[in-house]
Amino acid sequence: MSTTRDKLSLSSDAASKKNKIPKLKEVEVKVRFDISKDTLLTYQFKHNTNTHFLPLKLKLDPRAWIARTKIIQQHILVNCLNKDIRLSYDYPVNGHICHGKFTDDLLFEELNDTAESILLEELKFASHLINITKNDFVPSVIDNTIKIVTNYLDNPAEQDIFPQTLIYQRGKQTFFDWRGATDLAVSQIIKKQDDEALSFPFPKNEPLSSYSLCFIDLDKIPTLACLFGHVVMEDAHPFYQQDHSLIYIKGDGEFIYQNLVKALIEQTSHLLKNICQKPVGFLFEDSVSKCTDDFNTIKNNALDYINQAEKVRKKENDKAGLEYAKTLIDFTNNQRLKLTLEQGFYWKPIYFEVLTETIKRELFTHISDAFRETFINNEEFYFIPDTKCDFIFYSAEEYGPNSSIFFEEVCTLETNTPSELALLLNASVKEFFVKHPLIGKFNIVQPKNKILMQVDIHDKVLIFDDEKVEFICIANYFIGQLVPQQSELILDVTRFKKQLCDGPLMQPGY
Image 1 (cartoon, helix red, strand yellow):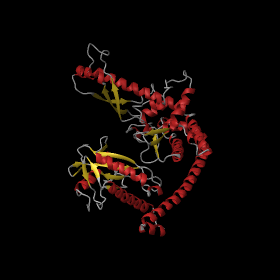
Image 2 (image 1 turned 135 degrees about the horizontal axis):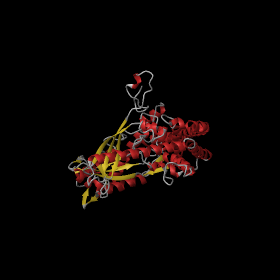
Image 3 (image 1 turned 180 degrees about the vertical axis):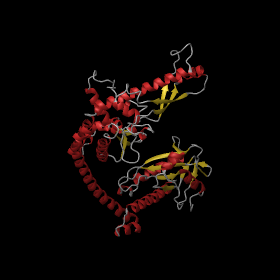
Image 4 (image 1 turned 45 degrees about the horizontal axis):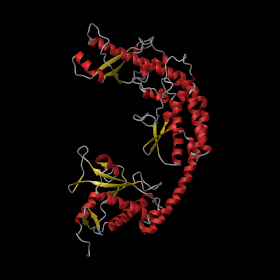
């Protein structure tokens, strides 16, 4: 029989013996105890060592734990523990001294007792949580989901129908916090429990997610992971490892709430599917079967409505985009884009390329006119009108060598002390986007500029003609479906300065 951890572990030789039921075999986990800072020096002095942690192999015989645990706890003990555990430990400064000395044997005996005590507490917690939620948790989540989705279908334009407790903002990014939905359901169940009926002191005034588990591996017990609000995925990685409950939501305005509703429906579907998985999920099967039909009805209605709305919106966007493309052809007389449209080829990437190159060229002309005669640090510079536009570049590659992310994450930091030239160029860029007649004809908004300067990070320094690189990131001026993920222009201040310095001391034709 199998000895893998996803099933009850059995003795390797027992299966070959006839007329004998194989017995559970011993479970072993590694526990690392980190000695607390406050007691570290005492520990090191008492035991003549300079280590700051102690490793312990904790051997657990399920047969010896039968009297201490119940059925669900046995399942978790055998099948669902982490292999490596880290715990903090306060070395006893004043107590636990035997004949004036806390011997090594006594220390490891106490560590073993401490680990077993924490493990037993977690097993009781998980067992009681599963028992009190098995009938009401899923119906509570489904009921809350149905209410939110029904309110959305009744009034899709109303943005306040989605509870703010399920929305998490990180800067300008919006996330759906699935744990908010599960915490609400669990807290409602706990509040209904009679204090005397509870054999475990649940934190009634704190969300379940605030309770941390050290020994139990939630990836091995999907039922408990669902109760803790972990985001369940269907790909190769069943659970997010970093932010277990947050899902990034794209879009803005009304699209945010539509996508939030879609995420809520998706995660509720995952919950129904995963909460009944082995080893203890069978306890939730009855509650799942009672409310699945009601949820599927509202889910199908909502997804049908959203899909239809997205089709209508796509047609409207395609029509608007086509008008933008025709306007661009009239402005630039670009034959490639014109022929692409006429012959029915996919025109959107070409449109964006032509638009970007047009803006680069027009911005270059604007800067050239502004810097024909400019005073910087009391010196007079002249800009050659026919200089090549090699200080403005664009890359649609997210991490390409010309992308802002490449510069920002690898080599640069936003500066509070930009050069005078960078400030002049930044002002000229802003003026261009305000005054140029081309901008008002397309879905272009005022950009968000950042001035960044080269700093020493990890010994990676970009140098241009003996000067550290300084540049302006011109971002977020394109909106709508015709925009790639990265839509920044990079204006290289250092390269532009070199062109100024190489220019004539007097205007051409003076």
